[in-house]
Length: 364
Picture 1 (cartoon, helix red, strand yellow):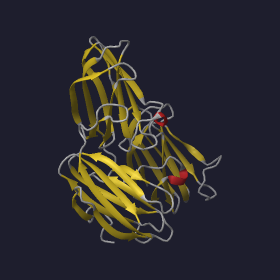
Picture 2 (picture 1 turned 30 degrees about the vertical axis):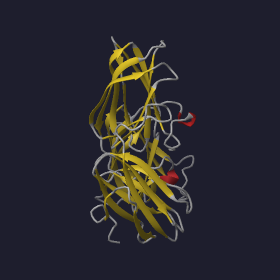
Picture 3 (picture 1 turned 135 degrees about the vertical axis):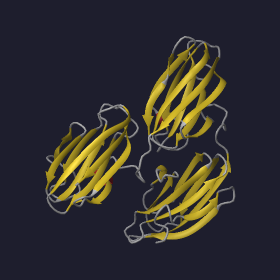
Picture 4 (picture 1 turned 180 degrees about the vertical axis):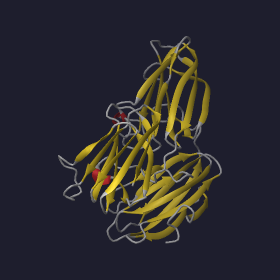
């Protein structure tokens, strides 16, 4: 159990084209293992979890310990992650999901790439790599009308307030932003509807501007408007990071809620994450051993306001939220309530399809 934290993660060294394999096991007493690796340059990273006798999940974490990609196949199916990453330090987490535990083989490798790979077609988008804050500019790109536009893909290193703008435009053009809904690495019909759109011309600019999570791959389509001619433009992507603090993305249903465990007098839980039109609901779970005065505090850190916080009690203890289990919603930034011993769920939601980076604190 010496590899159960980021500080004690097993080192994989600097990843390269030669695969690095590690064999280990996870079980109910040793639920997760951490591994650490580094990249000397922007690279295409491949991670595979194989040889499973039970269910285990695979997570890719940034240097702060935040999950930026995950593979959660059922049963003993192999787990596979492929992601373009910038130079830096990263972690891998193997998490036991099996009642009896399982042995596993973790195989890791990286090939040079990212930050410009791809030809710009729908099937081969230009790879902008992982946006980690600040500006990324591509100068004097060209795009034709619908059907012959330019395509890009990118990921985010953290929850980010993202802006995408067309500048120095000859003619006029439109932008459409998609996410890889089925996570197959391709922009296809299953990745519609789009997230949002924008446009630009010589005289005006309506950039794409919204907060997005780091759990997805995003595709950007740029097209020339109302003409058979090509459009010349600069593409400017700006990201301001709003770091989360959770090792995995909270589940969107009570059954997959992120479990905080027991909340004791003087205890405090804090969750920093995202809700919006990419991930509409986050669920958290905690338990009380006795009657306790619990305080809930919410802050919208970036993006749209009014994240909806709702408290539920699993009154019959069956792990299912039923009619009548809702206690109420948090109006304002803070509220306290005396709660009896039992199991509780808290949901964070954006019902109007806004996009918010939020902070939720639960304390006793």
